[in-house]
Length: 122
Image (cartoon, rainbow, N blue to C red; front, side, top):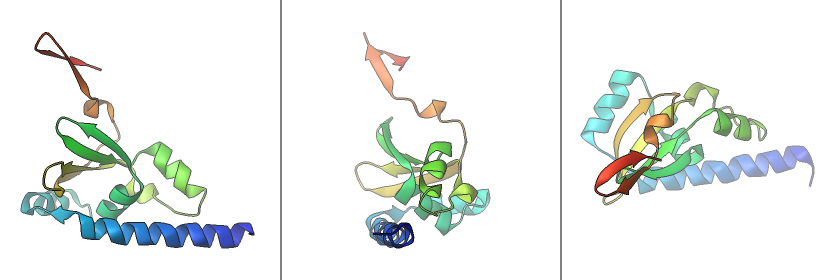
């Protein structure tokens, strides 16, 4: 398989994955308002869900699209630079998008460890 055909195949597979994710997650009214207020479009939301790293923290799933993801998918011809820093918080119970925001600092989404009833940063 040549490189051009391989890149096209990968891009098509990612497009299919994005369609599946779009159907999987509902959008709360709060998330829709936050997206509008923060200037984050549907395409940014879908990019974070499809290509972002998935982190379980504070009782939610967080999809975060950072520098590493942007660089990784750039090798396949997928430009995620406009969406860098988008983070999507998804309810674990309902699977709906709770909120969407942009923050390039991922340190705030570290998991917490509990020791003797007190939360400690991981």
